[in-house]
Length: 113
Image (cartoon, rainbow, N blue to C red; front, side, top):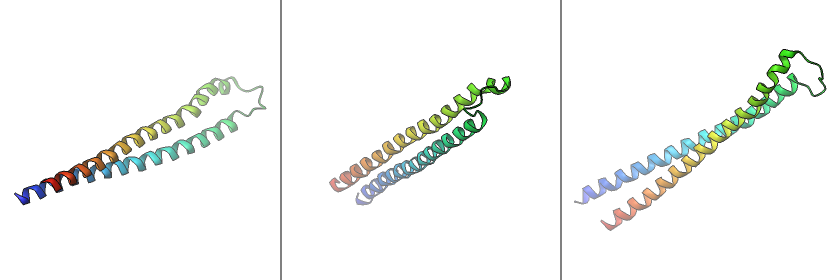
C-alpha cells in the first residue's frame, strides 16, 4: 500500500511540474511577443515618418491612397503583438498557479496517507 501511495504522489507532482514548465514557456513566449510589439511599433513609426514626411503637402495620389492603410498597420500590428503577449502571460500565470496548487495538494494528500 505504501508503494501505491508513493506512485500517486509522484504522478501528481509530475503533472504539476508539467504545468509549471508550460507556464514558464508561455511566460517566455509572452516576453518575446512583448518585445516584438515594441520593436514593431518602433519600425512602423520610422517607416511612416520616412514615407510620409510632415512637411510634404503635395504628394502622388498613389502615395496618399496607401497612407490610411499604412497608418492602420502602424497601430494594429503592435497592438496585436501586445494583446497576444498579455493573453499568454495570463495563461502562463494561471498555469503556474495551478501547478503550485496541485503540488501543495499532492504534498498534503501524500502526508495524510
